[in-house]
Length: 579
Image (cartoon, rainbow, N blue to C red):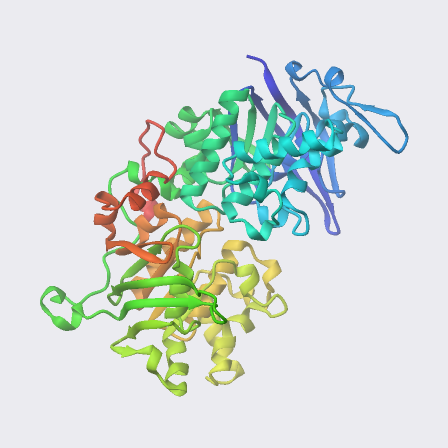
């Protein structure tokens, strides 16, 4: 079978103020019709640069040093692609199948019609002031595909095909009126509008819940099986690649470390970097024996027989949170009758899809929401009935770590000031002592001391998440609420943060409420779990029981959607890696 796409010896460099940075060092890969080639690797590996080069969308400071990018003969680019330019009446024709030779006008004839792009973040990729129908029809309009009525009918067909209900209604709506999963489907509809033979999917599911991710990936599978579409799938998740790809290309620092069939690469990895990615992928943990990153929770030796040890540090009872309402309108119920208990030194996970009430529950525990009804008892005291002074003290005992450190850390402050700020807010110590405390926290989270003088933009995402954890620890809290604290990280950085959380829990006897939509991570780090759906708790119990014997269909669907379960291979995981 001939290749739809062939990349040969591709090298790209960026021009910066400090000199040239080589982003790609002679990349080779290919995509065949009806198949998926997955490019995997951490941030900075060159995945997105590769995708941008294929689309002719490299930044202005990028230079294609050498190499070729070629569309296969099936596409007959020179014969099939033409587009009228209304402003000068001239026909634009891509006269070569070598994409690296095309000029800007020829590229306009290729994008959309021959190559479709599904970008990573629908929130940033969809124009907030454009209706959904306009977005989906844009490629049709640019390529002057038929008339307006035909384009409108095509939009409805596309929305229906990607599984969006009421396409006529959705076409009139704006992006903010759709869920994250629906917005990602809109991007897919726009990408396939002109039935391109090649689709580039750049991290199209990284921000989605596991069940929504599964539906999006199933849709891509349907496109390639029915239409013979070739897919270049960019991802940092080896589990997703293992489930869906025919070929896997592993990249690091702009170089291909390993490539071959998915079964071959994932069952018998030859490069140490590939083995590390496999070891760090939480979705593959079920393939091995039950090995967890965390040690048993800190308890007293006779905890099974003492009431004190069994008393939970945190107890949530019949929690209900309403928003809005009034003037005859029904309030929105975000959390409805949620109850659970968390023993000291353990981790309780709140899992579920977006909109299930996880974050609202976590913010209520941390004191940022005033629940409509119910109670939250911390160390026996109902925090909802505390006076102002006691509530202020509670904020020292309970800390919240957000999902995105880029938005939760002040970009103008130094790291030392960020970590020491909670101490200053509580009037603890002088400037010198706060500086020493910040330095101690850096040691705890395994960051170098010279980070004290840096600013957030000078650190990686994983380092920034460590800073956020250090800031939460500086007040010596007893409970930390972690709201999707590792969901945006590469698997290797994610593994480092999870090991850090386990280490800190053991050393400091910390208690965690761990909010996540990633059940593979939850399975490894938590002791107990509450499963939420539409604000209600549908199931709760020990992690072992929930994953081994889920009682509800919803929980069964969540577990079944965990990626990394389709390939018939056994991954070898060393205890040294996990501990």
